Image 1 (spheres, helix red, strand yellow):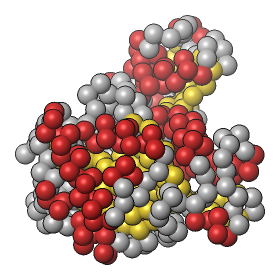
Image 2 (spheres, helix red, strand yellow):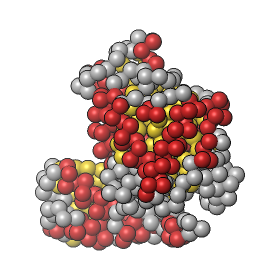
Image 3 (spheres, one colour):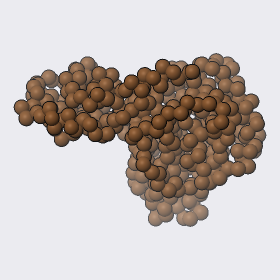
Length: 415
């Protein structure tokens, strides 16, 4: 049985009503992959003709499911997604590749869909063989009980060290017709952006062609899932996929076949917001976290330089432990800027914690108040802003603090 852990103090206090997406149905089951007594596999069934896009880890040691999805994505169509928790099916060699194929074959047989339109993902322990035959015992019942309202349960089924399910939903207009976007994510540890970060599956009824979906998704992740970090470790299994059933075409929504189509403006904005919402939820569930931290860097030589500096700060164990200790130790921020490898000038640096400027022109700010800043650091949300003072480049990234609980969770992960 999975160990019971407290829900993150940064978890959403409530969930908005999840909007079902026409052409998508969900089901979950307990296949006994790793833990007894909990759901650990989810199936998303997609109507025929559903278009697919995806981005995946850049790890040089990708999981077998990542290899499978990359190969199948070339067709641009999807009929089903099978995701399991408890076992990542990563670093499992030819055995892992066979398990991935068998998983897809079982799903194809149960759904009647082409093998080329079955996508899979796995999350959990690395290096242990996945017994894919366990899916054979539950796949038929998954297909039979699949329901359009099952998004939240599906998000629960793919949790590992997550303490809460992560879902989001949005509406947008395309050509005067309202369309829906809903999605889920899982992730709490081994979170560092190198596309994607963890597992996430987004669904829409908009009639958008696969190449257009791909272009939008690749761009959108740069300011969301590619702008978060929990512990600087990139997963072998990172998968983010976007599926468009096209069902809204029956209500008059125009089919979008060009990435530059102006009718996509509202949809693109809604997708950006939904992905950022899910990415923030991942950070808010960072293993053992108690603080949600935004790092904003301005005045860098370029936007890319600003982002690299921001990640140097956000990934610094010294900065993150200072946040955990509610210590306004801006010297650690200075150190992180200096080690980033990007252009910086010590005597032009300015640093803020919230609205309090703590450092200015290479010195502690003359108006610095330890009492006021210490009180600010006790909040759940901490904003760190740095002005490099050299250019116009700016970027924001999001992270969390590093606590004793993080060490405990990861020291005991395989037990």
